[in-house]
Structure formats: structure tokens, C-alpha cells
Length: 276
Image (cartoon, rainbow, N blue to C red):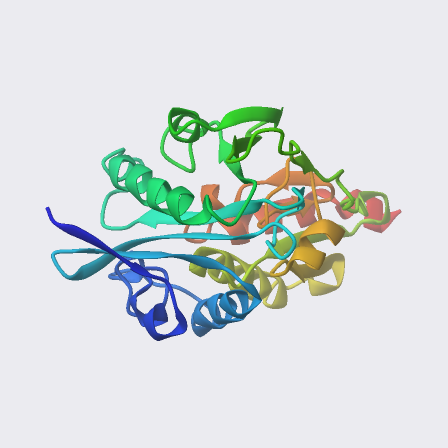
């Protein structure tokens, strides 16, 4: 398979696999305004984000992005360095490791591109075999700085003596209104990702149509920029999180109507507190 890398730019946003018409979205049903993904990338490019779009036999299949640390929308302090933002090779099943070889090559291209201009590259990896895996980054020469399961801050220095990056302290605290008979839902989302947009829209629909809407307090926050990443940093840090009365849940576990059922179950369980 012949793969060509072309610089990411506004003219190539339509080729991003996570934008409308892209391979990652093909055959799937998403809620929400997916055009926001292109808007997010356009804004970040104007802030200094760089990267590549990967074309296999002329078809856009993947991308990798990085940005100067002083504008990167992650709560990472890394003076003079850059931050690896997102990388993805589309067209394989979510748990299929086939994409990892291509993602490794894309990250190698990004580090080679960034090396002349930055002191090093920081990244966040996951203790997961196929989703931003720590092992993939370690294999590329990154070293682990600190871990807050399931996420680790990793570092690849380009210059001798460059300062080691740090992860900002958590600043967000989820609410628990159970004592008042109310289900507090705190949810973060980002326009960088179609899945995040989809989950946020699903939650709005579930809450707005619940027959006991007054027993739910939904607060959604958007994490698109560096300032928002620092202001809304949770532990372990991610830009898409959901808490139900201060208990973190993973929305990927709730397909179909199961999210609606889970919210209904939790609201019903608070009935005694409301009655009191």
C-alpha cells in the first residue's frame, strides 16, 4: 500500500476522516452538528496547529496533529515544546490493532517535522492496547513522566537539557445533588471529535425528554481551547467526561436506549430524597 503524507491545511480539512464525508463517519449515524469538527480544526490551524493528512492510494485514510504547547488545548505545561494532539487511521474495527503501524508512521512524520522548531514533544497516552496506547508512544522513544490511570503524560525531548513537561493539577469538581433528590449531570465535550459532539447531543435529548425533567440538573461544558483545558481539567484528564452525581461514567458503554434507561434508573433511585 502506497501512503503519501500531505501537510494539514484549511484546504485539506474536507479530507480529514473525522469531518463530514470522511471515512471514520461512513455508514454511521451521528447526532449533532458535525460541521463543528471542521470549524475546530480551522481555528486551531490559525493558532499554529500543524500536521499531516495521510492518503493511501490517493484516498484520505488518516491524520496526525500537533501544536505549540502554549496554544495546545491540553492542560500541559511544556515551555518551548509542542504537544501531540490527535492521530487516527480509519477503516479498521475499533479494537483491531491493524491501524497502529500506520499511526506509528504518522507520528514519526510529525516528530520529524516538529524537531527543528521545538524543544520536544509532549503527549498523553492511554493504558489501552489500541486507543492512543502508551506502548505505541514508548516504542517511538517517548518516556513516561507521570501516570494518572488510565492516562500517562509522555515526553520526547528534541534538545539536550530541555525542561520536562508537567500536567496541570485538576481544577474541575463534579457536583453531587443526590441529597436534594436531584441528579446532577456534569458533561464535557469538544468540537474536535464527532463522537464527542454525538454524545453531548444524545445527553441533551435524554434529559430534555425525561418525564421528570425537574429532577435533573444538566451542565455541559465545551473544552476546545487551551484556556478551557486548564480551567476544566479533571482527573485523569480528558476532554470528554461525564459525571452522574460525581460518579464518572463512560458513555461508550451506553449504546442505543441504555443511556436513557440509566438516567431514568438513577432519577428513580432518588425518589426517597425528593419525598423527604
